[in-house]
Image (cartoon, rainbow, N blue to C red; front, side, top):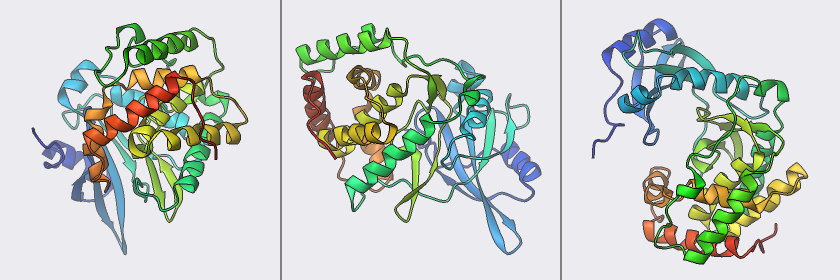
Length: 310
């Protein structure tokens, strides 16, 4: 497998960065970006200190399939700027790749890191939930230009993995279908709110990143996606604890059907989670441990179980 993080951006991109950021870009460090994009951190000497930036480019196949990806990111970040959490500030954009050979967006780096091994999980979950509430409390005026929410996958076409019980899977699908049919109030939906996209410093959240899929829709879509990822990393108790903390902070009740939507929409994720977790310092997260945790979570969710309370 090619390590997309190993190579720095192309020479055209480097020249463009020098013009747009006011200096020679140095010290490129790959940040991954998942399967859809390459992301690098870099710095520019700015007198007595370094100015740090992040440059993101969709991978060539993705850029061909979604030529408007960077343009969508610009719209999403404009909406995100209304959120009361740290969000990336746009520095430069080459929407069509005419300067850089591939669509490119540059933002100022938010100083912080992904935290997947908190010393106090309860406090970590409370702050994680509070930051999602802040996203959902963005003013309605920020939603106007955003697309409407839709699941990543058609629920009726999601294939049951062998590690999920057939009856539990059927119950999840039924609940998800019911919730998707309800006309719920619209809020700002991050669309990929999970621990890898939240940055921490000294025990506090300093930023939320990766807003490219941002849309307007039911807040439960974010809660379900986040809960699935939390179950994979920390187990079902922590996942349900997060839901209760979100409900308490937002003064709402989360429809459990949205937890089912989150599960079915990300059902293929277990294979990729260990690599992501290892890059953030959690070498103990293996495919077996993720499948074990998610199996327990699905079983309890399908049975209507949300026993854990903060």
